[in-house]
Length: 346
View 1 (tube, rainbow, N blue to C red):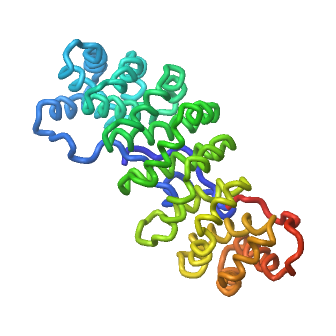
View 2 (cartoon, one colour):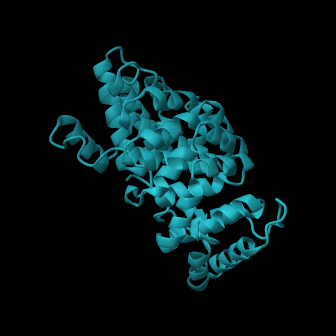
View 3 (cartoon, rainbow, N blue to C red):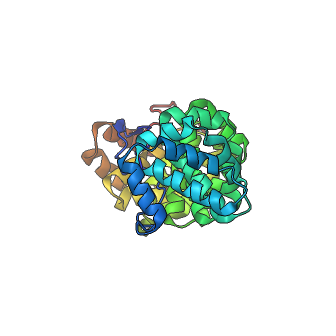
């Protein structure tokens, strides 16, 4: 884990800081991935302990080398410099590394591409660099790496896109570059880290309506429901957070019901952790507010008893949502609309 994600997340009326477990930080280099016994490792250790401006300038120059091996070496050392010393992130960007690193992302050499992607991620951990990365054309190459890169390159590309998406105007550009279906694919088919990184990026990107639509059209509901149904996946909370962002769309609610999401959400309210119960109840409330049909389906799944329990044990905001939902479920079936009594926030 390299750095805390800048954004805070709102959950059940409370703001969680960056060390919240709702969304984990995006990883980069694995500890011990590069041996400190190797010459590059020793060079990095020395550079971290002393002034390294000359080293950085030399490494940036080496990125344009005609030798792929020299490019790999330079990109690897830059990614480690940016990982190990936060002030290096600004120095590396100011030394002109961003454009040659972006060029490396387009390389046909998988390892060179991976080093380039990860160096970009590490540089993006500095807020000052995020705008420069986007304006330098990093988004489309990162999306390409998300499509054809190694598993590690895909994961780090997802994290880098997350960082860039923390500038609001970048969210549309990332969505329009084709990132959303690729992130949905990573959510569904990636390893555990890939799923985490994809869910975190999607959570950020889907605050924008057009990206919500893209995510639903890309089939996000199926993996979200499957992950929420699997308590051993360690993805229940993260998937529910993403789902809560999406269900403000009527088409998202319809697909959720088609994917048998209601029984899964009711089960979470019944047997999940306190936080899982709260987020599931918030999602169910959004589903039920405007549809007597969905209210009937939720009630038939046996939601009222666990909601009563939640209304007696949750936070004040959770109790209010649970009580509102219970009232809706007990309402005689008439019409398809109800007055909105809460927002979709959690």
